[in-house]
Image (tube, rainbow, N blue to C red; front, side):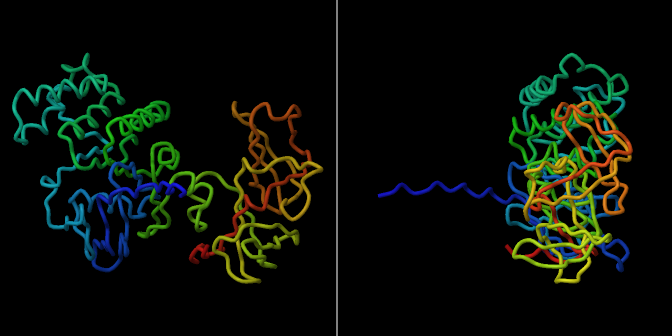
Length: 380
């Protein structure tokens, strides 16, 4: 008898948003019909531009805002009426909100004042937290005597020290410079993996979201556009907004001229044709936008023929050496913003401005979206 196949167990749902609306003026909605599950132990990032609804979602979860309609459940129980201080959630704000008159260890120990634990246990937690965050030698310093990264770690430690059910972070790295921000992304990611805590973070920085998250929820205009693992959102965006917001892409406009199962042929504005995977485009004659990631484009080879490959000529307008890659901007089908990204060392010939290059990419790496970006994804 064959052995039963092992199934990956489904993660436990910690928090559920059910048909949640939020309006601040009774007319327009900051959040509309939000359905969202947050799994125990995951790092979930709420990502989107300013005004997209991500911060309103976090504030409702924290208890600082109340839903206009719908429910928020914690382990199946209604959370809406529970005040913030009774939710046992740790919160890290962008400005850290450290007490300037308290030392590092006093800031860390502050949340423990309000919890029924012994003095010995409080001291142990503070010592363990200082060691975990590599702050032991700074224990008697005040916030003004710390670097931005050190202050950020104190704020994170203060949110973790009382063993919260959930840690909420509102743009936690927004005040740091780029190099330190990238370093802290990895530190927080490692800390999350080490502790196994559940984290919900808000950011508008897609690079930060891709680096730190187990899953990303993309918001726009108060609506959840797509949720999934970082590579799923990057490789398979379900609408034009997500394709534009996550990573860099080239976009070519045209109309659907033929449909072939999961693919379609698109006639571009100059009359040339390209093939793409259908995502949410309409029938023949519908306006579409085809997205192609710059790293998927390459100089065409003789072997790149047939329906699988798209081939178009490009006029080199700019080439920029980035260290790890060469960024080549071309004019393609009337667009001056078509970019090819080639890994450093992948070519011995450096294209020059004015050169004409035969460009190619696979149709499986093209995505055809409704031009308005408002159609539903097509069924599998």
